[in-house]
Image 1 (tube, rainbow, N blue to C red):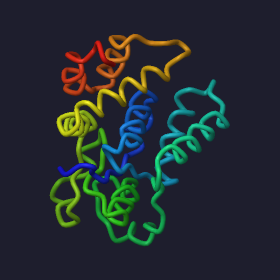
Image 2 (image 1 turned 90 degrees about the vertical axis):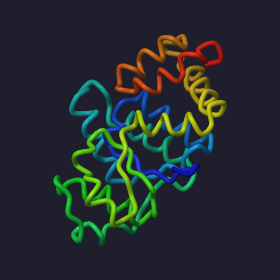
Image 3 (image 1 turned 120 degrees about the horizontal axis):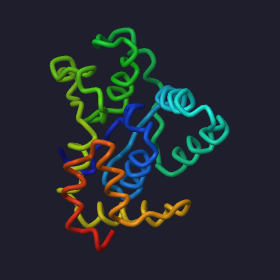
Length: 190
């Protein structure tokens, strides 16, 4: 995978706030050219609200707007005409693949690899990858820049603040086991 890789983030990797924050910061650091759509936004926001009814929709709209402002050229549009021509195990995921094709992305970052079979993506020269594998590839390409992004993420946590170990434990709990293993030796700088 060449860097910076162009990647479409599926809604399920934008759902957990700590992972979303890290993915955004890595894009800001120039390690990835992050892409998403308004439909992807709608999906992760709908699920966050369904599972956290105490959150206000306005707060998530603010998060959405901050994401769009934080990452240059992140929103993909004009892909909608491709959706009906695509076949995936879950038809509701076709919009993600359509956005990736339209954006000429190399990768879809998703927890749901089974929904994006390699055989169906190969013809589009796109691969689906688990966020842990994706993050490891970014770390291996640019460890210093990756650690700087994690440090900026931790520095941004003020309510409550987190130690580097606490942040790594949170990320590990989100399935980023290999990524955290790469980061542990650098705990003093993050």
